[in-house]
Structures are given as structure tokens and as C-alpha cells.
Length: 92
Image (cartoon, rainbow, N blue to C red; front, side, top):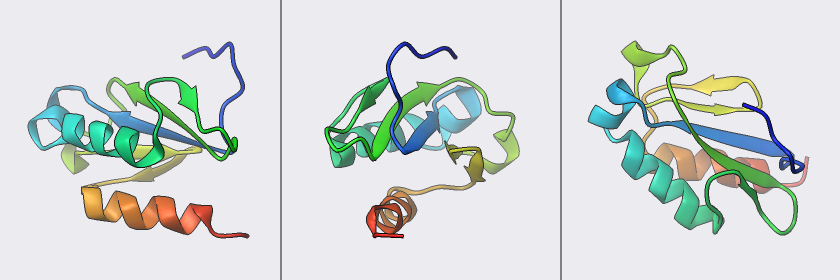
């Protein structure tokens, strides 16, 4: 839970613990990694996103779960994650 390097503006955490794993959490993590071009505890070159594979978020009933800067997203699919990440890339 500690980080030695700066995180991105949007820190994306994907749960891969058992409940999330059983409904696609690991595939969701790999999808996020491929889309962002980074791996576990890495940050994109532009500093916008960082990615982390995490253990239980306590959202087992709503798996798979993703947390971005303390905002929880439940029943996340690859398509939903794409829309979410793309919306964060847009200038605010």
C-alpha cells in the first residue's frame, strides 16, 4: 500500500482477489494494463494514469471492482473501463 514513486493523476486499482477473479478481475487488470501500456505500480509517461493490481476492496458483492482515486466502480467490464478511462483523458 506504500508507493516509492509518484502515482498518476488517476490511480487505477483493479481487484484480482477471489470474488473479482471469478468474474473476470484478472482479465480486467490485463485489459487495463494493455490499454494504458503500463504494468503493476507503473505510471504512464504523461503522468495521467498509474495502475495497480490489488487485493480485496470489500466489494465482493459487486465484483469485479475498480477504484480510481477513492471512487469505486462495480460490475466493471472491459467496455465500461474503456469508457471510464477515456472520459478521464479528456481535458477537464
